[in-house]
Length: 236
View 1: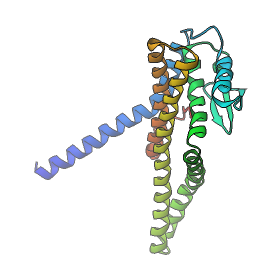
View 2 (view 1 turned 90 degrees about the vertical axis):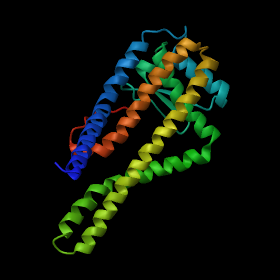
View 3 (view 1 turned 135 degrees about the vertical axis):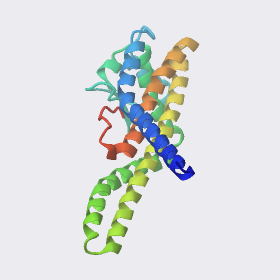
C-alpha cells in the first residue's frame, strides 16, 4: 500500500467520522431540547407565572410596548414586530424552563430596541435567503437538463444553484450568532426581574444551550439534506 493510498483512506475515514458526528448532532438536538426543557420544568422559578414576568419586563424595559400573546403548540415561541408569542406551556409556567424561553424571546426584543439597524438588515437577509433557497433545487435540475443542450448554460445554472445554497448556509450561521446574543440578554433579564441566583442561572443556561444546539442542528441539516438521513424534528 502506497503513501497515496494511506492518505486517501485517512481522508475517507475523516469524512465518514465527520458525517456521522454531524448527523448525530442534527438528529439529536430536537429531542435533547425537549428532555432538557422537561427536566428544568420541574424546578419552580417564582410564585408568578411567565406571563406576569413578560408583562413586568415589558413595563420595566419597553414602556409597556411589548404585546404578550399565548399561542398553540409546544416550544413554538417567537418574537415578531413588538409582540412576544408564548406557547401555553411556557406562558402559564412558573419554572426555570418557561422563564428561560420567555427571557430569550424578550432578548430578541432588546436586540431590536438596542440595535435596530442591525436587526433590520438581518430580517432582510432572512427574507432574501428564504426566497433564494426556493430557487436552489429548480436551478440545479434545470442545469442538469441543460447539460444535454448547452454546457455553458448548464454550468451557469448549476453555479447559481450552489450560490443560493451557500447564501442560505451563511444566513444559518448568522442566525446562530443572533440567537446566542438574545440568550445572553435574556439571562440578564432573569437576574433583574426574576431574581435568579447563580444556581438557577446555571440551569437557565442549560435550557438556552439546548435551544442553541437546535440552530446549529438546523445549519447541519441544511448542509446534510442531500444524505436524506436527517429528521424533521426542529425548533426554530
